[in-house]
Length: 538
Image 1: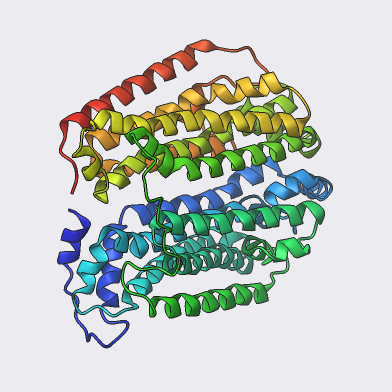
Image 2 (image 1 turned 45 degrees about the vertical axis):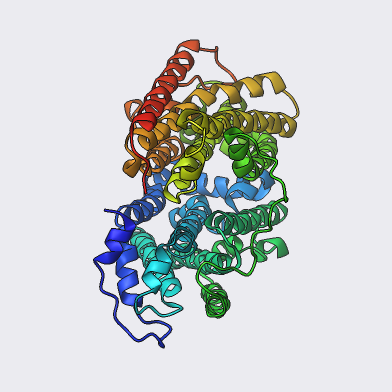
């Protein structure tokens, strides 16, 4: 059932002069459309946090080990920049330290996707104009989108609180509110971006840019201080969530700070929403040149995706430098803790600990690069459903040449960002450039496999194309959380990344690389064949 058809099943009542008329019906529509996506996001975020209890109890099963970890983190600025400081070395405090920041970031990503999806994307596709022709208030769509985000973040907060309540009700509630509050904060930020920008892509880009800046500020501040008191940390909403200090003398007033920021951004978003027409924005797109300079479908694809690729490339290079600089401190952090050493080795192979850390980080870069590749492939799906592809294909442009332009950016861009991550790690680590470039390139066949799977779903089963995100997210979860949860290797091998050699360190094994490359080629060919045979979506 399409979104327009689903919208037709909801009767919208109310008065045209009421700005919130029809909010209830739009909220039910949003929840219906997200009935699969929202539960997955909520469960993944909450389970990531709650499941950390068992792994941390196994890793640091004595007071001495936990105290040693806290002391190591206080002395290791590189690891503090990644995870933040340890405010308390109890199990609850370690869960908040290890998973709190990343859960807050994931909640922010979930929230910005929800809000932009139900505001600017609806306007961009013309569905909002159809809905607004009924008795729908001017601010009802924005209200429904924000309420959807609030419900999702409240569910995350409740699950985290319930799952960690055995470690202390106050700390569990504080961590749940910090994570959920951060998500709502970025939901209102995305609401402002949706009013300012003329496209959903730009709205997501603006909000994601602020989220990236917030993470960098938090990381820079925590690298300089061991107690979260840096000005840079306090300039970041992610730093606010950290400074709630769950399970460590909770600072409840920081929750009020988050709530005040949410309220202020809501006022701005609703004020802007009441002052513009549907489809319009306060930052309109600049007109292009009088004479077009794009002569081919491939040139158009490069023009559409170049900004995204440049952003990912810069991010991977900088992140590589940061993680490369951490490698020398990995051994000091782990110390004599055999369980922690085993986790690094399961993620990065049975090499020396520094090489294992570098291999683990290279694998993580590969799994994140898969998200870029999937997004780049599914850009074709967005072009098709928004009916921008149809005018192009109505001319003397075949489907395969049109797809080839986007696929070149997706597959070639994935290889480029991995090369830059390897170069960045070599810069940060101070050497081993050939080895780290090779380790980065080894991840590319697995990235291509997930990208090719996305192409297969888009080409042959377009209504199920969004499932590619679920597969990529599952692979990321298996690679990041699986070793810490001591999952069996057979489960880890469900991800294509589980079959690759863990470089640098051990001998190179070409068999999985060749097989994954062949698998990617086969999936891509099947996806292109499906695209040639099916009708375009309308």
